[in-house]
Structures are given as C-alpha cells and as structure tokens.
Amino acid sequence: MIVVIADDFTGAAELGGIGFRHGLVTEICTVVPVRPEVDLVVIAADTRSKDVSAAVADMLEITRKVRELGPELVYKKTDSVLRGHVVAELKVHMEVLGFNQALLVPANPALGRVIRDGHYFVNGVPVHETAFAMDPEFPVRSSGVQEMLGEGFSESGIIVGEAGSVDDLWDWAGRVEPGMLLAGAAGFFSAILDRRRLPVLYVSGTTFDTSRERLKRLYEDGGPVLYMPVDLERAVELLRGGKLVVAEGAGGMSALELRTRMGRLIAQLLEQVKVGELVIEGGSTAYAILKEAGLSRFVPEQELAQGVVRMRVPGGMLVTVKPGSYGWPDSLQY
Image (cartoon, rainbow, N blue to C red):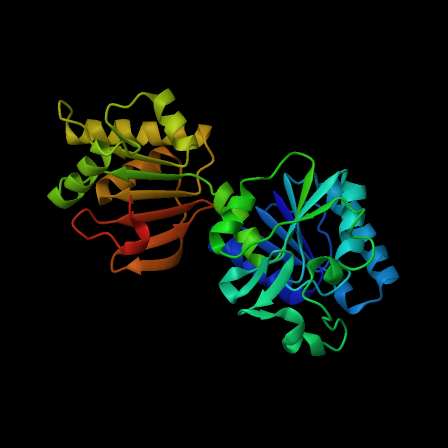
C-alpha cells in the first residue's frame, strides 16, 4: 500500500487522480483510515491554511497514524511552488517515520514549472515575478529555492531535485534510496508510479495474420515474447521485468488443449506475480483463461476502441479483451 500525505484537499485529489490513472485502487480520506484495503490512500489535510505550530501538530498526529498502517511507500505532496510549511512538515514526517533524508522534487515541467541552477521559473519567468508574488497567505518573494523554503532548510536533510523536463522527473524517481522520504508535486509522484508500474501480461490466442506478424517482429527484436509451451520460471522472470506476451506455438496441440494449457499457465503466473493488467486477444482464449484463473465478475471501466474493453476485477487488476480480428488501439500495443 502507498500512502500520500497532502497539505490541502485539491492536491490530494490530484494525486488520487494520478493513482487511478495508473490503475491503482485509490481512496482519498480526510482522516487516516484504520485498515484500508486499497492500493493507494491519499490523506487530505488542511495544514496549508494554518499557522506553522498548528500545521506541525496536525501532521504529527497524521504521521503517527500513517506509521501504524505500515505502508510500503509514503509520499508527501507539497505545493509545486513551495507555498505552505514545507520544511517544518517534512521534518515531522522524517522524524516519526524514521527517515534520515528527504528527496523533494517540487517542479512540474508539464505545467511550465521548472527549477534550474537553484532558481524556480514558471513558463520561463522567475516565480517571484508572476502572480504567485501576490498570494494572500504565502507570497513568493524570491526565485531562489533556498529562500523559498525559508528558515530551517539548510540543516534539514532535505535534498531538492532540480527538474527542467519530464525526463528529469523520471531520472529522480530512479535515484530513490533506502531511508529517503519522497516529496514534491504531482509530476514527481506520477514518475514514481511509472517506475513502480505493475507488470502487464498479454495473451494472444488469435490466428489472424496481423497479430501473428506483430508478435513475430517483437520476438525477433528481442521482445518479451514466449510461445507455447512455456517454461514457467522464464515466464515469471520476464513478467517481473514489467511485461510478458504469451502466444500460441508452432502447433502439435488441439485448439482445446492449447487453450486449457494457456489457462493453467496464466493462472499460475497470476498466483506468483502481482499483475496490473491482463490483456487477452481472442474470445475463446479469454474465456478459458478467466475460468481457469477463477475470475467471474468484471466491471467495465473504459472502451479503448470498438470491441476493446478494459474492465476491473475484484482485487483491483484490470482485464482488457480484444477480438482477434479487431485492430489494436494505439493506447494498447504489445
């Protein structure tokens, strides 16, 4: 489970939306839930509107309760231009959760908000020369990041990651070390989820030439394609790497036997690896696999193209099915 602690409600909602977009079962709460059975819990506080002593007291209580949940990842959502009690709140989280460092990446290049050479710019303009200088509660008086963070930053153990592009956010997400609290704006959180994205398992059970040729090219290019019969250990290894495509083999099995073996294989893979999305091409193949995996209830979430439907099953995994004769939508390629 991932827990986000946000200092205002709109920021909490924004990160909840990012979690949903990444396929996580998400809940946004104004109090810390006791036993959330979801992938992502976003705690919406209101500390940005309070004075620093009240903000610290609130975050102390919230963080102690978050610690009891035992999350695998805690992320602190801050304002992208560092309004609020950023340093004071981060210090509370670090102390309670036992972190010795915090990596703060507040820039959001997708919105034109970047940090270069220690200074913050919004669409190329120093932040203190924009409308943020007139904020009624936290007017920005300097573009210097150290000055923006204010008193207590230099000895805080907080590292500020500069970012001028979305690729920079991806790079920072790859530099996470044990004992490091992660914090920042929505862009950095999205990059972290991209780095942690659950694997996708594709199954092709169609005889149509377009799909077979697509798979052949991917296989010849060294892609993660395994043809039936499949070695389970190798399949698990590839799937844990992020993606696996299982396809029909060269023959020797009847259609019924092939579907049955595929179903058993996929059921074993789902038992050993937590999969974010199962994509199945071919109706008979889909039915055999889903029956073998014990999946019988599906809630449609998105129509990616005509006949290509993304659904969610109990437990949160996505299941997407496509008729073998239909084309692949751009958003769902091998």
